[in-house]
Length: 310
Image 1 (cartoon, rainbow, N blue to C red):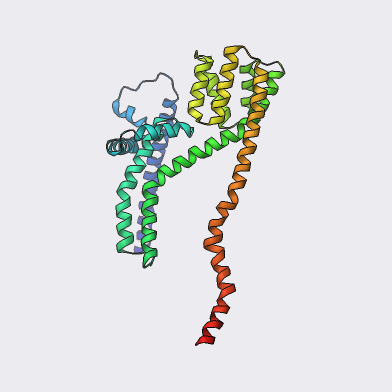
Image 2: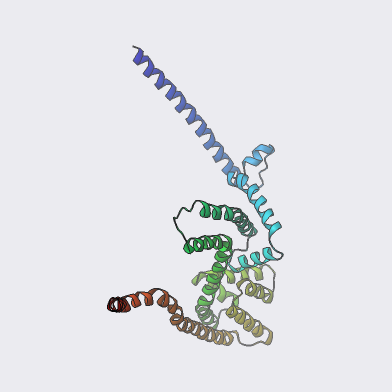
């Protein structure tokens, strides 16, 4: 009888806890649904200050104050002009938002705090079990990666985007030339090219067209596009189009000449990379392949000579 009463009590307590959890989860779900619906209403105003704060996602409520604090520390202790350089690099990388710059500075602050802690841990604890000069090389490499890692990643992203712009520009110009020679205007040809060839260059052309339709002149919009790309080929294309507009030259002829020139430049760039390949192959050959060959070829001879003279 006592066992039955004990089991019944456990079941009742479990049922009560399950019911309480179900009620709490249901209320939270209903509140989240209501908040999401309120966010989608245009012009809706909440009078209660607490309800206004709850309409903001929890990620922004919890992380944004910390992010702003770290960003302020990063701006305070960075060299003069560094923030402007980072902002310009983010523009070249295709991410011109201010939030991206703030997150980058916050990451730099976090890594600046973690770097001495990680280096002390590697020196004192020695978790990798290394010794000698190789240990200090690994510690120095870890410090270098932690300090210079964010800048290196940002520079790599800029280089990859510029390479993609430089690579896709001849194909875009071919389609643009065909569209203009078929009778379309320059802006209509750009619209067709943007739909046919998606990518970062198409995004830049779309933004340029948006600026023109918003009231900016074509020259100002194209110069702004050239500054956002920072690619010599795009700069040459923009200058050619502006000169064609200024002197009344046929747009189709200018685009045809630019298309051929960009294709030649892309071929020359590929040839340049191919010529650099043998030089780059020397490093792994000298430090990885040649020592193994020397051991295989000269090792037995050295052993025989040593045995003969001993």
